[in-house]
Length: 274
Image (cartoon, rainbow, N blue to C red; front, side):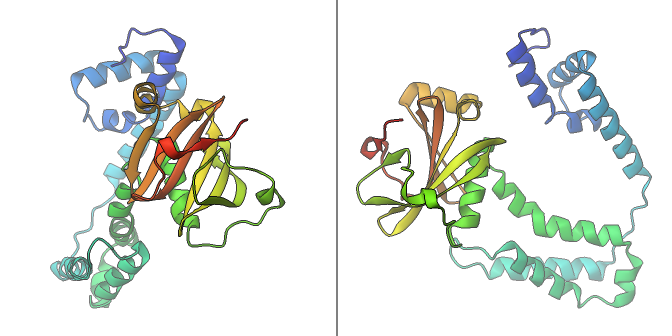
Protein backbone atom coordinates (compact mmCIF):
# COMPACT_ATOMS: atom_id res chain seq x y z
CA UNK A 1 0.00 0.00 0.00
CA UNK A 2 1.18 3.51 -0.79
CA UNK A 3 2.17 5.35 2.35
CA UNK A 4 1.63 9.08 2.99
CA UNK A 5 5.39 9.63 3.25
CA UNK A 6 6.12 8.48 -0.31
CA UNK A 7 7.72 11.21 -2.42
CA UNK A 8 8.61 9.31 -5.59
CA UNK A 9 6.75 11.07 -8.49
CA UNK A 10 5.29 7.89 -9.97
CA UNK A 11 4.03 6.67 -6.61
CA UNK A 12 2.65 10.13 -5.86
CA UNK A 13 0.80 10.08 -9.20
CA UNK A 14 -0.59 6.63 -8.41
CA UNK A 15 -1.73 7.91 -5.03
CA UNK A 16 -3.36 10.90 -6.73
CA UNK A 17 -5.39 8.59 -9.01
CA UNK A 18 -6.32 6.30 -6.12
CA UNK A 19 -7.46 9.29 -4.09
CA UNK A 20 -10.22 10.08 -6.60
CA UNK A 21 -12.01 6.93 -5.43
CA UNK A 22 -11.58 7.87 -1.77
CA UNK A 23 -12.70 11.52 -1.73
CA UNK A 24 -16.42 10.72 -1.62
CA UNK A 25 -15.88 8.33 1.30
CA UNK A 26 -13.74 10.94 3.04
CA UNK A 27 -16.51 13.54 2.71
CA UNK A 28 -19.04 11.09 4.16
CA UNK A 29 -16.66 9.91 6.95
CA UNK A 30 -16.71 6.33 5.63
CA UNK A 31 -12.95 5.68 5.47
CA UNK A 32 -10.92 3.78 8.03
CA UNK A 33 -8.11 5.47 9.93
CA UNK A 34 -5.37 4.40 7.51
CA UNK A 35 -7.27 5.60 4.44
CA UNK A 36 -8.08 8.87 6.19
CA UNK A 37 -4.41 9.44 6.96
CA UNK A 38 -3.46 8.82 3.31
CA UNK A 39 -6.12 11.22 2.03
CA UNK A 40 -5.20 13.99 4.45
CA UNK A 41 -1.49 13.63 3.72
CA UNK A 42 -2.16 13.92 -0.01
CA UNK A 43 -4.54 16.84 0.40
CA UNK A 44 -1.85 18.77 2.25
CA UNK A 45 0.24 18.91 -0.91
CA UNK A 46 -2.33 18.78 -3.74
CA UNK A 47 -4.34 21.91 -4.50
CA UNK A 48 -6.35 20.21 -7.27
CA UNK A 49 -7.63 17.57 -4.87
CA UNK A 50 -8.37 20.19 -2.22
CA UNK A 51 -10.52 22.04 -4.74
CA UNK A 52 -12.26 18.80 -5.72
CA UNK A 53 -12.86 18.04 -2.04
CA UNK A 54 -14.35 21.50 -1.48
CA UNK A 55 -16.79 20.96 -4.37
CA UNK A 56 -17.86 17.58 -3.04
CA UNK A 57 -18.33 18.99 0.47
CA UNK A 58 -20.45 21.84 -0.91
CA UNK A 59 -22.59 19.41 -2.92
CA UNK A 60 -23.02 17.14 0.11
CA UNK A 61 -24.10 20.07 2.25
CA UNK A 62 -26.65 21.20 -0.33
CA UNK A 63 -28.09 17.72 -0.72
CA UNK A 64 -28.66 17.53 3.04
CA UNK A 65 -30.80 20.67 2.88
CA UNK A 66 -33.17 19.21 0.27
CA UNK A 67 -36.51 17.93 1.59
CA UNK A 68 -37.03 14.18 1.39
CA UNK A 69 -40.61 13.44 0.31
CA UNK A 70 -42.13 10.23 1.62
CA UNK A 71 -43.45 8.03 -1.16
CA UNK A 72 -46.74 6.32 -0.47
CA UNK A 73 -47.05 2.61 0.26
CA UNK A 74 -48.97 2.21 -2.99
CA UNK A 75 -46.11 3.75 -4.96
CA UNK A 76 -43.58 1.43 -3.33
CA UNK A 77 -45.80 -1.63 -3.89
CA UNK A 78 -46.13 -0.81 -7.60
CA UNK A 79 -42.37 -0.43 -7.93
CA UNK A 80 -41.71 -3.69 -6.07
CA UNK A 81 -44.19 -5.54 -8.27
CA UNK A 82 -42.59 -4.19 -11.46
CA UNK A 83 -39.17 -5.37 -10.30
CA UNK A 84 -40.55 -8.78 -9.27
CA UNK A 85 -42.28 -9.23 -12.63
CA UNK A 86 -39.04 -8.52 -14.49
CA UNK A 87 -37.00 -10.91 -12.33
CA UNK A 88 -39.53 -13.72 -12.81
CA UNK A 89 -39.39 -13.24 -16.59
CA UNK A 90 -35.68 -14.05 -16.75
CA UNK A 91 -34.94 -17.14 -18.85
CA UNK A 92 -31.64 -18.94 -18.25
CA UNK A 93 -28.68 -16.57 -18.17
CA UNK A 94 -30.22 -14.00 -20.56
CA UNK A 95 -31.65 -10.91 -18.88
CA UNK A 96 -33.79 -8.24 -20.49
CA UNK A 97 -32.06 -5.21 -21.87
CA UNK A 98 -32.06 -2.21 -19.47
CA UNK A 99 -34.54 -0.22 -21.55
CA UNK A 100 -37.05 -3.08 -21.52
CA UNK A 101 -36.69 -3.37 -17.76
CA UNK A 102 -37.36 0.36 -17.47
CA UNK A 103 -40.52 -0.02 -19.57
CA UNK A 104 -41.72 -2.74 -17.18
CA UNK A 105 -41.16 -0.43 -14.23
CA UNK A 106 -42.91 2.48 -15.91
CA UNK A 107 -45.90 0.28 -16.74
CA UNK A 108 -46.11 -0.61 -13.06
CA UNK A 109 -45.91 3.03 -12.05
CA UNK A 110 -48.83 3.89 -14.34
CA UNK A 111 -51.00 1.93 -11.91
CA UNK A 112 -50.25 4.52 -9.24
CA UNK A 113 -52.81 7.29 -8.94
CA UNK A 114 -51.93 10.70 -10.42
CA UNK A 115 -52.18 12.53 -7.04
CA UNK A 116 -49.62 10.16 -5.55
CA UNK A 117 -47.13 10.85 -8.33
CA UNK A 118 -47.72 14.59 -8.11
CA UNK A 119 -47.24 14.43 -4.35
CA UNK A 120 -43.67 13.24 -4.81
CA UNK A 121 -41.26 15.85 -6.12
CA UNK A 122 -39.85 15.45 -9.62
CA UNK A 123 -36.31 14.82 -8.42
CA UNK A 124 -37.45 11.96 -6.20
CA UNK A 125 -39.21 10.17 -9.07
CA UNK A 126 -36.20 10.76 -11.32
CA UNK A 127 -33.92 9.34 -8.64
CA UNK A 128 -36.01 6.18 -8.31
CA UNK A 129 -36.03 5.63 -12.07
CA UNK A 130 -32.28 6.30 -12.32
CA UNK A 131 -31.60 3.70 -9.64
CA UNK A 132 -33.85 1.16 -11.35
CA UNK A 133 -32.49 1.77 -14.85
CA UNK A 134 -28.80 2.26 -14.11
CA UNK A 135 -28.05 0.64 -10.76
CA UNK A 136 -27.66 -3.10 -11.45
CA UNK A 137 -26.56 -2.67 -15.04
CA UNK A 138 -23.93 -0.04 -14.26
CA UNK A 139 -22.47 -2.24 -11.55
CA UNK A 140 -22.27 -5.09 -14.06
CA UNK A 141 -20.58 -2.90 -16.65
CA UNK A 142 -18.05 -1.64 -14.13
CA UNK A 143 -17.27 -4.92 -12.44
CA UNK A 144 -13.79 -4.97 -13.99
CA UNK A 145 -11.52 -2.40 -12.33
CA UNK A 146 -9.20 -2.01 -15.36
CA UNK A 147 -10.27 0.95 -17.56
CA UNK A 148 -8.82 -0.46 -20.79
CA UNK A 149 -10.76 -3.72 -20.30
CA UNK A 150 -13.99 -1.84 -19.62
CA UNK A 151 -13.44 0.26 -22.74
CA UNK A 152 -12.89 -2.64 -25.13
CA UNK A 153 -15.72 -4.74 -23.67
CA UNK A 154 -18.18 -1.85 -23.94
CA UNK A 155 -17.16 -1.09 -27.54
CA UNK A 156 -17.27 -4.75 -28.47
CA UNK A 157 -20.78 -5.15 -27.06
CA UNK A 158 -21.96 -1.99 -28.82
CA UNK A 159 -20.52 -2.89 -32.23
CA UNK A 160 -20.82 -6.67 -32.48
CA UNK A 161 -24.42 -6.50 -33.81
CA UNK A 162 -23.89 -3.43 -36.01
CA UNK A 163 -22.48 -3.10 -39.53
CA UNK A 164 -18.70 -2.94 -39.30
CA UNK A 165 -16.94 0.27 -40.39
CA UNK A 166 -15.91 0.27 -44.04
CA UNK A 167 -12.40 1.57 -44.61
CA UNK A 168 -9.94 1.53 -47.49
CA UNK A 169 -7.37 0.40 -44.94
CA UNK A 170 -9.37 -2.74 -44.15
CA UNK A 171 -7.70 -4.77 -46.89
CA UNK A 172 -4.26 -3.21 -46.51
CA UNK A 173 -3.71 -3.21 -42.74
CA UNK A 174 -2.98 -6.52 -41.07
CA UNK A 175 -4.08 -7.20 -37.49
CA UNK A 176 -1.31 -7.66 -34.92
CA UNK A 177 -1.95 -11.40 -34.61
CA UNK A 178 -3.63 -14.15 -36.61
CA UNK A 179 -4.58 -17.77 -36.00
CA UNK A 180 -6.00 -20.65 -38.06
CA UNK A 181 -9.34 -19.93 -39.77
CA UNK A 182 -9.16 -16.21 -39.03
CA UNK A 183 -9.25 -13.31 -41.49
CA UNK A 184 -9.61 -9.55 -41.25
CA UNK A 185 -13.04 -7.96 -41.80
CA UNK A 186 -12.53 -4.30 -40.91
CA UNK A 187 -10.31 -1.88 -39.03
CA UNK A 188 -10.89 1.56 -37.56
CA UNK A 189 -9.48 4.15 -35.17
CA UNK A 190 -10.84 4.34 -31.63
CA UNK A 191 -9.86 5.44 -28.13
CA UNK A 192 -8.94 3.01 -25.34
CA UNK A 193 -7.89 4.14 -21.87
CA UNK A 194 -7.96 7.76 -23.01
CA UNK A 195 -5.37 7.19 -25.78
CA UNK A 196 -5.71 6.54 -29.55
CA UNK A 197 -5.94 2.88 -30.52
CA UNK A 198 -6.47 0.76 -33.64
CA UNK A 199 -9.30 -1.77 -33.70
CA UNK A 200 -9.51 -4.85 -35.93
CA UNK A 201 -12.60 -7.01 -36.49
CA UNK A 202 -11.54 -10.56 -37.31
CA UNK A 203 -13.66 -13.47 -38.47
CA UNK A 204 -12.79 -16.49 -36.32
CA UNK A 205 -14.69 -19.57 -37.44
CA UNK A 206 -18.36 -18.62 -37.28
CA UNK A 207 -17.85 -15.74 -34.86
CA UNK A 208 -16.25 -12.31 -34.83
CA UNK A 209 -13.42 -11.32 -32.52
CA UNK A 210 -12.00 -7.83 -32.03
CA UNK A 211 -8.34 -6.97 -31.62
CA UNK A 212 -7.16 -3.67 -30.18
CA UNK A 213 -3.61 -2.39 -30.58
CA UNK A 214 -3.28 0.13 -27.76
CA UNK A 215 -0.72 2.49 -26.31
CA UNK A 216 1.97 0.80 -24.22
CA UNK A 217 1.48 3.19 -21.29
CA UNK A 218 -2.24 2.31 -21.16
CA UNK A 219 -1.54 -1.41 -21.41
CA UNK A 220 0.92 -1.51 -18.50
CA UNK A 221 -0.88 1.03 -16.32
CA UNK A 222 -2.61 -1.55 -14.13
CA UNK A 223 -0.45 -3.57 -11.67
CA UNK A 224 -2.59 -6.71 -12.09
CA UNK A 225 -1.83 -6.71 -15.82
CA UNK A 226 1.87 -6.09 -15.25
CA UNK A 227 2.10 -8.95 -12.76
CA UNK A 228 0.17 -11.41 -14.98
CA UNK A 229 2.28 -10.57 -18.03
CA UNK A 230 5.44 -10.95 -15.99
CA UNK A 231 4.38 -14.34 -14.62
CA UNK A 232 2.63 -15.97 -17.58
CA UNK A 233 3.09 -13.67 -20.58
CA UNK A 234 -0.56 -12.59 -20.79
CA UNK A 235 -3.52 -11.37 -18.75
CA UNK A 236 -6.95 -13.01 -19.10
CA UNK A 237 -10.31 -11.94 -17.70
CA UNK A 238 -14.04 -12.37 -18.30
CA UNK A 239 -16.46 -9.45 -18.07
CA UNK A 240 -20.15 -9.52 -19.04
CA UNK A 241 -19.77 -13.02 -20.53
CA UNK A 242 -17.04 -11.58 -22.74
CA UNK A 243 -13.44 -12.87 -22.66
CA UNK A 244 -10.41 -10.59 -22.93
CA UNK A 245 -6.78 -11.58 -23.48
CA UNK A 246 -4.09 -8.93 -22.97
CA UNK A 247 -0.70 -9.51 -24.60
CA UNK A 248 2.38 -7.27 -24.81
CA UNK A 249 3.69 -6.16 -28.22
CA UNK A 250 6.80 -4.25 -29.18
CA UNK A 251 6.16 -0.74 -27.83
CA UNK A 252 2.42 -1.42 -27.61
CA UNK A 253 -0.21 -3.69 -26.11
CA UNK A 254 -2.82 -5.99 -27.63
CA UNK A 255 -6.32 -6.79 -26.34
CA UNK A 256 -8.30 -9.61 -27.97
CA UNK A 257 -12.03 -9.55 -27.18
CA UNK A 258 -14.77 -12.05 -27.97
CA UNK A 259 -17.59 -14.21 -26.60
CA UNK A 260 -16.80 -16.40 -23.61
CA UNK A 261 -14.76 -19.52 -24.48
CA UNK A 262 -14.32 -18.40 -28.11
CA UNK A 263 -10.86 -16.83 -28.09
CA UNK A 264 -7.84 -18.65 -29.52
CA UNK A 265 -5.25 -20.07 -27.15
CA UNK A 266 -2.22 -17.77 -26.82
CA UNK A 267 0.04 -20.54 -28.16
CA UNK A 268 -2.01 -20.60 -31.41
CA UNK A 269 -1.41 -16.91 -32.14
CA UNK A 270 0.95 -15.86 -34.91
CA UNK A 271 2.40 -12.41 -34.30
CA UNK A 272 2.95 -10.25 -37.36
CA UNK A 273 6.24 -8.38 -37.59
CA UNK A 274 6.02 -4.68 -36.79
